[in-house]
Image 1 (tube, rainbow, N blue to C red):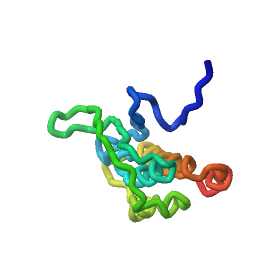
Image 2: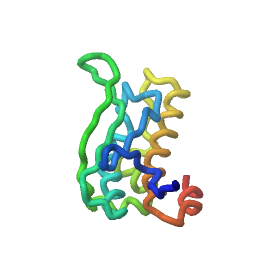
Image 3: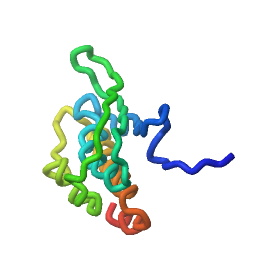
Image 4: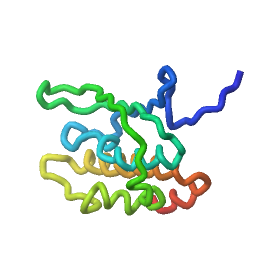
Length: 142
């Protein structure tokens, strides 16, 4: 049996579940980019016609326990930032001012470059899911 499903979501007992991992080697220092751009993803859910709560789950750094942990949160779709879904570059500037940010002295260039790439990938993934058939157009901006 073949089922149609949205690759954006995993299934979790009927809930929409958006689960991602650690895209950056600097989550401990800067946080998980998936958490930072949550308002953009809420706009994506709204554009996709989702009106129920979505469960989001990401690893984050717990500074009080000095260890990683999984953060699980229910979020409500919201159209406040929907206008940014059509412009990944504007979305980057909205969440990361300035873009690109300055590299802190305690971070290697190699890890910082990986972090910047991860941030762009997270933002562009959301915008690509929102764009429908304009994948190639958005990838040219990357």
